[in-house]
Image (tube, rainbow over all chains, first blue to last red):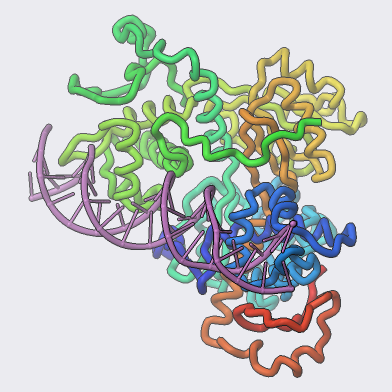
Length: 263
Length: 263
DNA sequence: CGGTGTGAAAACCTTCACAGCG
DNA sequence: CGCTGTGAAGGTTTTCACACCG
């Protein structure tokens, strides 16, 4: 199995900062909406509002692409749509395979925004032989055995993994071996891939945990020191699995003593 | 409708940097796996590898939580699991509602990692009256009319939006009005929410577009100047919708002339 | 000795504020 | 005059490298 680099090492591709690249799709979406309403030009202020960023950031982002605006006026919507599309590589068509056609895979296959912008679902692949042939979103599911052939035959370079966590690395290895160089991973695992392969991760439970962190903070904002009150008293509650705490000086910020363990 | 702040203003909650918070769930997952294999301690090097980051970063991250390691040895797995869980607020139970039970909503409802870590699906809500009562993942779907009541009755503070884009803002407004203060948005729209409400976004098509950008870059790495070859020649291909290009000096990096437009 | 914890340096990203152009 | 484009300042994140401790 492939055991190479793990994280993308801040690719920092030709001049355009990664943070900017990550926002271009946002701008593009906002611009597309304007385009559909036949709005001819837009100011950085307006566009920034539509994309949910501030205008200074937007202008700086665009400055990496070139000087595409007109002072005193703003940006030509159609022209910008084209420039950003080109920069993102959306002027060509990207065949994509989705591996793992459970609930999530089916959702992805049905996702409209998929086809609309340069991406085309070339194949759906699942390990369950019973699914083979069943159409999902109008595309018949194929068996994992065909994986390599499908990728080579269709010249696919982008793969989406929506399998259970346990299968993800194995699928990933096969995708990479077959020539895939970009992977979008929905399985809750860290994938390890060789150099030159990009992995992006979408992870529901991580997002929720980040929200929980902020949520907790909001709740405890005014009710500050409370858990840190009487250590021995709270300790009586248990600490089910909390283990070898040496009796040393932990300088953890507050409530050092376990109360409830989740899993 | 709620028309307040748009983006979260870098909440920067009590000392712990946002970037660190975003990685804690990763560490937690790796630690949980170690815990299940009854590994008692782990070094920053090992844990970092399992989480897909480098060890310096991991140590710095942990240093914000406190001094929970032992020099020359490493970190006590169980103890760290507890500390991180507590920091993330996972020692309490978070009821969550999912609004929009299409393919994606169903996938989310069925997602196992959901329940395992402090999160509990309190209700599934959909606008389609025909779905009301149908169980998904063992939970009966309720109609949107009940939204406010469900949230208040269950003390829900986290909402997941998996509706079509068109419905998202409206649903968001109702969630917020009913008391929700954290939202995970799967709809491809920028949500506008009042101050104090956190929004996180998961967007398939944005992720794909970022991958496409890097993919394109890889492809064009050696075949550099080529599109920038003969401007007038390539222009003959078309430029379907590319609009009012004044004949001014655009200083775009390369290939300034449209060839194919996607949408 | 081995590995954590952390100042200091470097890289990166955002925001400011204003020159300059249409 | 209005708005872009951008140096410069400010902030955050990552990386380095090593003191220090078990």
